[in-house]
Image (cartoon, rainbow, N blue to C red):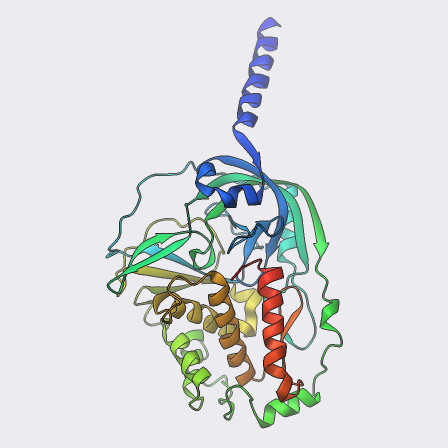
Length: 400
């Protein structure tokens, strides 16, 4: 009996020790001094947002270029929630910089009822009717998250002599200075995203659809031919995309679309100058470093949730293609541009590609209308920019 009491006391003491190793903190506290939490087990309460290329926890604007902590699942999780598309940068085999050594403590995810509810809420997509809604989930989720915090002093991409010599950061474009490798969730509640701002939804066969059939105000050329079942490109999304891009007549946006489509490998190529594509498990800790070379020493590992993207896969490819081109070949003066700029550019070019392929109504997560073919031509640019500014600031919580 005394032995049982002793064992019970020992277990209670051990549990207390384990709890003491988990640091209660906030999103803003971590982002203001990321390396102070590097490698620690932390508990953070906030709002989890799973969008098109976003999977973060935030608790308001911290006054920083990025105001959220990226969430990552342990390898092998195969969760349903998470981003629909993302690009992660890794050192190539011929990386010219220094790779910091070190291993992090493995994390095992607790797949209990709370996690299953968490994952279920995050995976529910909003059906807004006949238009296209990229990454428009039905719920934001409020929860307490526990996991290992990985951090760098700053998310960085350093270049020298045409080579990438410094990589730091996590998540899409490695834009986040901190990521939480999830161990458990609790206090899970779902909050429906308000899509009332969409107003009246366009109906099939509306005047907007007729307008788009006559003229594309952004590409200003005939629409590319429809891909049919006897087309040899139908089984290769990249080859199909490149064929559609090549069919567009010259314009500034057409050039951008063609460059974005060209960065990806076709099914026969597998990898192209360090760019690879995976259709499968989203946002998990990478298993190992890359073994391929690239022209600038970096690998761009792209992942797409093919099932949820459906017919929007082409737009998603153009979106990530633009991000890759912005990172590899930034415009003069934009070498150290914040993620706000890359996100802005990617949405503009992807929207132009969608408009060229008869997407009459495009919505961004949170209900921001990026494109409506029924808009008067004089209002199009203003409406798009207003939607983008609101989306990037209030939804993605990015700052210029």
